[in-house]
Image 1 (cartoon, rainbow over the protein chains, first blue to last red):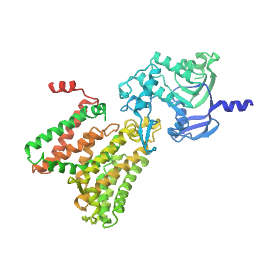
Image 2: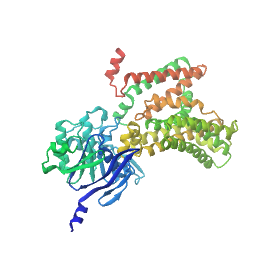
Image 3: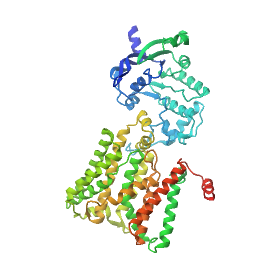
Image 4: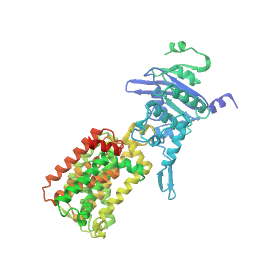
Length: 250
Length: 328
């Protein structure tokens, strides 16, 4: 196998020359990067750097003005989050994307509810038993023993974020995007989350968006720094770059 | 329904207000009219309730999703007039034509609300007025007689214990709506869309498609209600749906549905319909002017909404808390 072939098969996601404009404002300018199997890629930058715009494009919430997205070497166009979910892309959003009036179990499976089929699949009813059992077990793995039949509005910020993270991992995604997932977590919950993400990265490469450089260096293998919609710097987290050096590029 | 669901449905502010209103009104009208609590009158109440209930069920779906459709008044009339104009003819064809006319209005409502972006209240207000105009034109401002024998039998025939089929249609729609909303993916998506549309969309729920289908369901239900109204009076005329405007919106709201979406119980909507129908029936039995119906309905609605806003949260209420509240 040549080096090129090796690299191609190693790359699970490639963004080529992605640009996005909102009227006169250019939120992303010609951004290109690759995500490899088994790695956690960090996306760093100040507010307005274009990190969230990039995630929204990759998730199909908005469409790029120009540029292309390749998943496992095949060009993809995501017109909606549903398209991205079908390709095995899951995302944990900064605002957690939860519905207050629904239970923990329902939020865990929102949009992807398991069903029980009757009459040769003509009638499908939501399988609440499976939803409650699986969501409880998955959350317990991260140390959250929640009453999953209660409405999610009754839980703390950390518990809600745990639901958002664990539901993304539950569906065994091909790629996972994490948009500021530690915002509402306690230090203990953050440690548990990082352990879980490290353990999961072999089967599920990730893009981790965060403001916290220490978090990024601790979790990510490679970090891309965005500024005003452009990539200004890329480095491997384990190469021992000091925070002060990184800050120069911000 | 398991015990938890029964508790969730009835032991909250909305459930308790409805039960208190139902019991209170039943006692009041039983004491004031000897004809109220009789088997014949109970049958009359359920038959009168059927049209309101079918309209309210269609509207209930939309309210849970955070939208509203007030064009159902005109859609009911359009459906009824269409049926009357096509008679005598093939009954199946008449039903199909009426429902297609109704669904067409639902499609228009969905298009202007979801594609053009007009708030549903305004979009459906416009279609209500527009369709009303169409109804006047196609009916030539007059009543049109329903000249078909089978159609009234299907929608208002009396086969079982002298009870009109409309009652069975109503029960059927309640059961189907309850099952859809509680046990199907689509039903859960309706609640998710109304609860937090942005989150629902981000999690892959096609929220616009969900709402579009609901506009069609609401219009189709109004279409069925139109066929029942026409079958009951054996005629259709412009303006025959106007009386349902306020109660059909009030019933789901009395049942706990929010105009902002995400909440609502079909069982409580059914109770809301029953309470409002009892008011109409009781006032009629007492020989009071129809204006009294409006006063009663207004008082019940504003009381329910006041108690709800006072309580703010729609959580379950324990018996202890109820007793504490009464003692206080």
